[in-house]
Image (cartoon, rainbow, N blue to C red; front, side, top):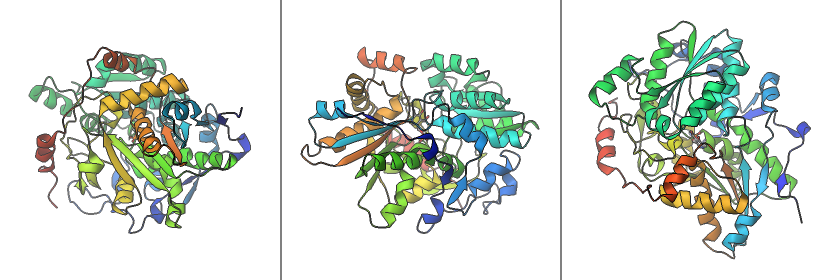
Length: 448
Ligand SMILES: Cc1ncc(COP(=O)(O)O)c(C=O)c1O
């Protein structure tokens, strides 16, 4: 019997992030000023982000050192384990080898903590006192609540209303780490009040919550804004996942044929997959697959265009796959995948055919999550169930093909059990592809 866990020794830990942007053929388009629609210099973003993060956002460097202070806090849970899902393989009757990188071991239970610690560090270094942010499923909000507390910062979280109601214990967790939380849209901001007046029953969306957090940050001197995905610096921070996974695969003499990650704003997928891009560019036969919900199919059905990251049109315009900034996705239980846009980095990887994208329905994803829990023991977050499903699809296409699959189990689902309860009670269903709503929202893309 061999150990199923591959643990990276402390002295092999990752000390530099990998920035994929210099390696993307044709690069990525610059952000545009939301008012003038002209390329936007970093100075315009100084009121909302610290210099350290803006430097990373625009960096042409391939490798960026990770400060000791960040590595020190990361050492609570990093390096995270790489696990061979042997019991799942057996249940599927496949000759494929399935490995998963397990990010649910972080204090708040997902990959989000990697970037949260980095963002809190750079803000603290520049004298910021308070951070405002949005959260979908609550994973990013709890990650930032933990990280801000470690650095002695205050934290204000706008939590998408449908998740606030579905996941009350996420709120308890954020409170435990000392943060303040309100359901979004909230009466605390002009954006929130306006949306509540027009649509009092709205489930909310990440696009709305981002607008509220940005309004909060721009209205206070002591506050900056933190985003849990999408931006280049967030994708950069998450590359620790793929860099560790590559070393761990090598420790057991393996290299993946297929790498899979679920896509909300894209940082999870970018974090696992982008360290494999140089190999792919060198001709290695490796497939990188991003998985998204069929009800919010940004990569598979979206438009590649400049769009706002939020509903109130406060963010810079980003060139990305988008369903339109005012698209409100159906209230699926994978709240962290309900975002209209996709990281410019991930969008460019798709444009360059360096990755593939697929979309899956929530019922088949929960079903896969349950099989995973019953075989490997870990109950996956609903977002991560999308990656589990995709790994099962790959492993069972041809049961005799001995391919090697690596996927990111981006978080555990222990605070998502009410969603599992609903699944067992027969109260969950698939949503039809929201063609009308998407067509309407893409009509509102900014005219350039
Ligand atoms: C467990 C989990 N996995 C994946 C995602 C999607 O992450 P990203 O926005 O980095 O694509 C989220 C987002 O909240 C999440 O909570």
